[in-house]
Image (tube, rainbow, N blue to C red; front, side, top):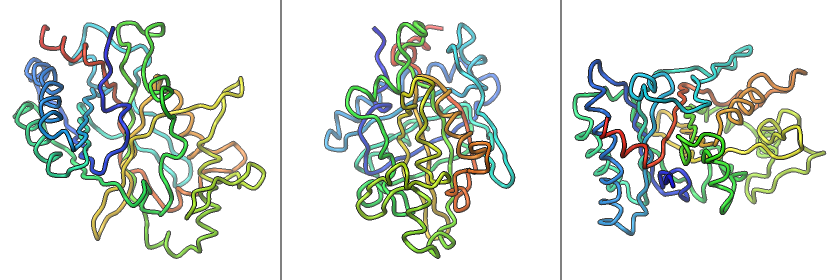
Length: 308
C-alpha cells in the first residue's frame, strides 16, 4: 500500500520554509535521484531533532511532470487555473519543483533546507524561498484565525489524498496549489473591527462564524464555504502560514486535496463571485502574486524515481 508524505496531513507547526525551483536543462536524471533521497534525509533529521516535529513535502509541477516522469501522469493534474475579473487576478507563475519544510524550530528548517539545496545542487534554479511563521494562536496577519474550516482527524486524509479506487498508480498522493498573497496591511488596519469581521464573516477575537443569514454574500467564509450538488461540503486541507518583514506581509497559501477541482471552485467563487457581483471582499486588501499547481506523490513513488 502506498504511503503518503507525512507533511501533507501533519498538524501545524511554528515555522515553515517554502522552496520553489525551476529545473535546468538536461538535469532530469539527477533531479530524479535527488528527489528520491530527500524523504530519508527528512526522516534522519526528524529523529535527530525529535522535539521539533519536523515534516516535509516534495511536489512536482504540473507543467514539468511529463518531462520528469514520462511514464505516467496523475489523472487530474492540470496547470494552475489563471483567473481574472476586474482588478482581481490569480496569476499563474513558474515552478517545477516545490519543497515544503515545517517544524517548531527555525534553525532545524534552515539545516534541512540547506541539505535540500545540496542534494539538488546545480540541477535547479532557486526562484523563491519564503520563511513563514505561526502568528499568535494560528492567525493570519489580518488578525483572524486561519484554517478554521480545515478537516479534522481521519477526514484530513480523506480530503487530502488520492484514493486507490480513483487513481491506483498515484494513490496516497495529493494535488497541491500554492499562492503567495501580499496584504495591504495599512489599508486593512484602517478598517474598524466590525467592518473586518463582515469581510470575513466571522468574529475576530473569539473566532465565531456568523450565522448563515447574517453573513454578507461577499464574506470570505461565504465565498469559500461551498457545497456540491448533494449538499456536501467541498473541502481542501490548508497548510498556509503568514510570512513577512517590516516592508512586506502576507500569507503563503498552501492547499492539498484528492482532486484539483475543489480549489478551482473556491478560487472562482472568490474572484468571479456568484454571477451577481458578489465576490470575496478580502481581495480588496490582499493580492495573489504567485500561483502554481503541483502533485505531491506518495513516498513509494518518490523512492521509485531512483530506479528510472
